[in-house]
Length: 279
Image 1 (cartoon, helix red, strand yellow):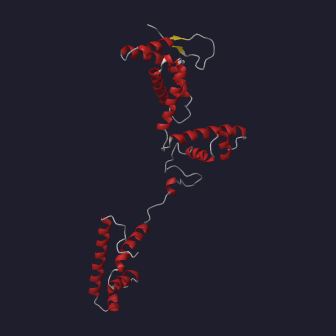
Image 2: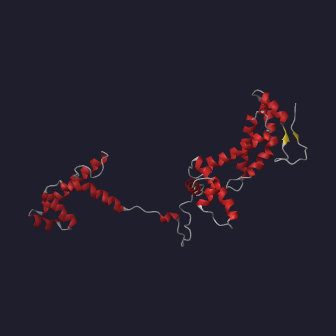
Image 3: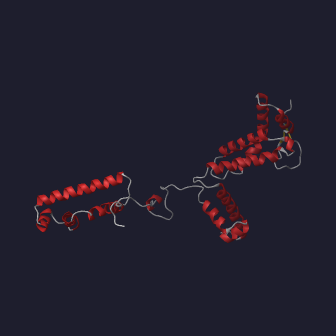
């Protein structure tokens, strides 16, 4: 049974401590599923784990713990070992490195964005970010313009602007976070609008308008004097020429009828004030 043997070549290699597992990988490709295949697969994975961890360390400054990144890289390595086909003629590391890096990038794309951003926009973000970093080195650290980034990347200015917007979508801010340059612990939540009772008043007013127009002249006049002119019931009675008790009954019955009509309309799902509104 072959065993994993460390390379002893002195020549520099992108992964100069990469183990020589060619024989194990060739044998692995011929084994059927089972305990023997799993055991050999685990040996190969352990041998290449240092390389996977090094690849994970490339992404250590992206607000993700190194332990989580190493787990993702290990998962990519397991996939590479399982899917590698030596008959294709390429070295294992040539297949494993893109597989592991792809798994790491997929992890960031699928799990670490606070807002859902399409894959194409994420790719634009990465190109714009890399271009800004490169151009800042040649522009005395001045921020490059949209046109300069577009020329540098070969993207359209519209795509550059889309990528720049995505730069702000990776992490969201809490509404309780302090507002920039604000005093007295002013938070972002303090900039949001509050409930405005005036909006409901407008809805109620528009709901009763068509019903008021359909009232008999005397009832409409009584409601106008009571609620718009703020007259007492006794003064309204003298103005209209009926008893104060009659005025009280008319106000009560008319308001109740309008209320029932508005509530029935709302329950039926109609637009407030639509019924009977002149075209």
